[in-house]
Length: 172
Image (tube, rainbow, N blue to C red):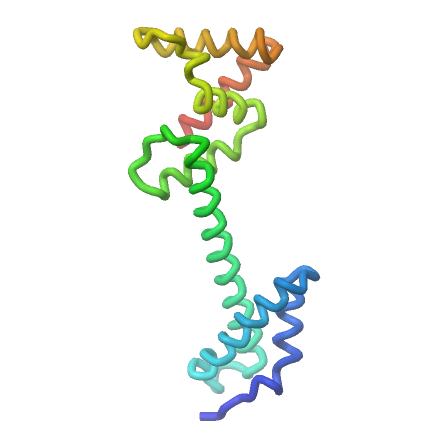
């Protein structure tokens, strides 16, 4: 089995890392580390009967960087979800994944819809009041009144925003 030296392919690795780094030196260094690790492991997988080493190197290193980016994005989403747990502490989900899906759903809504959800989770005493015997219809009416009087929203804006939330909840 032929051993390849990283020095012979460093310019190829640099080119791939520069492409994905988008001009960021820090990202370039991270990707270069990923590329070097990938270079070490890919030599055992290389089959000269299937392709040239340079093509194999290109494909494998690009794949390694994309896997790294996916993991980084997943970790960032998990960290965001933990931070948002403080904002939405009463969301009852069975798994961390379902909580992340809830956060993604909230983040996909318009700013108005996010504002309503924030009001519901952050200040329920304004909406609920002192009595626990009110129906969901009463809470919705109280929330609409709050948006109309304190936030100065039009009824059309309120109606459209509630409809957006309703549709998002039915999708999920």
